Amino acid sequence: MGRNGPTLYDVAERAGVSIATVSRVARGIGDIAPGTRERVMAAIKEMGYRPNQMGRALVQRRHETLGIVFPGLRGPYYSEVIHGFEVEAVGNANSVLILGTELIPHATEQAIALADRADGVAIMGGSAVDDREIERLARRGVPVVLLARDPLPGCPAIRVDNRQATRDLTSHLLGEHGYRTLCFVGSIDGAPDAAERWQGFLDAHRDYGEIPPEAPVPVGLEEWAGAIAGHSILSQPILPDAIVAANDEIAFGIASVAASRGIRIPQDVALTGWDDIPLSRMMTPSLTTVRQPMRELGAEAARALIAMAGGREVSCDDRVLPTTVIYRASCGCRRASGDLPIGRDSDVVQLGSAHGKGGGDGP
Image (cartoon, rainbow, N blue to C red; front, side):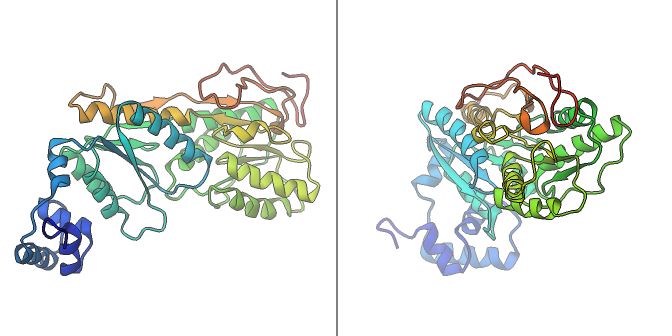
């Protein structure tokens, strides 16, 4: 036990449950089995547990801390979002708590426990956190902002335009370059962004009266997964005209396999990505992709949480940040459009595209 009496951890150990379960029972929220609730209440009474200063701080909103929950913490996309969130939070005298739910068996309970230690929490799409518990947090008065997913009642969302941007990108491949056999690489299960990009891919095929593939190539969103997909796709006797990757990391993996097999991009197969992480412009050939404001996503989430924690209303329940298609050499365009110095994260003007597979008399 702690010097000032039993702690949340002590009660959890005595009752044989998680600290999140003890917290929920003590506050009377959540769906707790009657037997579990009785066991926890008995342990609380027997040990004389009282909420500590942290619990009182939650009520008084004095944590000066913001939380953010991700599906995982690997890769440049998440690091950019975290950077934007952290800069805004620290600039407003808040520290940051980060939770990655990948491989965590009780992600919802962990997220609730995180919310107990913060003045507000941002939850990213794909995180294994139950929607009903998110709504309960909001009804309890905890500021919650959703990232890269649709809003829930009481929970504003900040996201980007995935569907239309991918529709524009795919239309460029079909209309400007004349490609006809395209494949989409990236799993859409549990990945709202990738699912919306797949819909944009299908929209463009409908626009041009073309028959799309029946389903995406279902691989994860990491570079190694792209390499697995690359080995499968590029070993076929007939290559697709173009590969639309759900993100830049998948595209990098495919590009590495193409180079090892002597397959030329874009002469033998065109390739595109999504996100416009800094390495995309340094790939050879440079990667055609969609630029999204990753840092701004994080910064906007932090601003919204700070406003909500201060009792101010957020002006928009569903804010969609703009995206921009960036045409580079990997799709067959001769000259890059709209590139910014590395490290910049802002919107640009779309300049145009080339015609014909492998390049032409375009930009």
